[in-house]
Length: 132
Image (cartoon, rainbow, N blue to C red; front, top):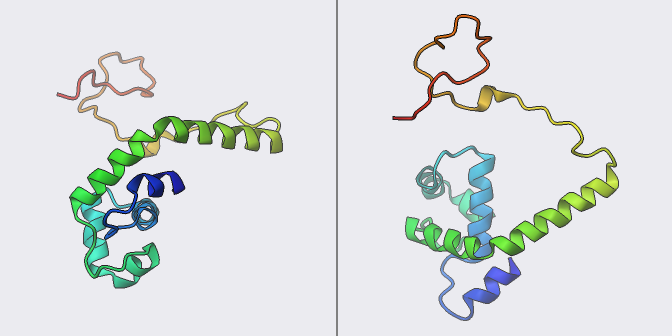
């Protein structure tokens, strides 16, 4: 966050970096499927705007989120390095971390529109080869 705040310099600060980040996290926590859905929630919920850190009475416009994500994407190498350090720290605390992986695929949407052609198929695959 400090890197992003430093990059903003002394320009306008209508929508501070930390408030933008907090709102993105809130969008994930409250399972908003899009930024527009999050913005609608922020426009209706003054307490959520306050908790996120916005002083403005209106939520940030979509263009503010676009600029925020562009600046965040510019920091991708630093974010990946941070993630690697966090994984290493967890690995130090949990020696067998990452040795086994289990995924419940029910949350993954399927694009198949018909059953597989192979009658011996066990049904563990998506029968569609194209999204078109």
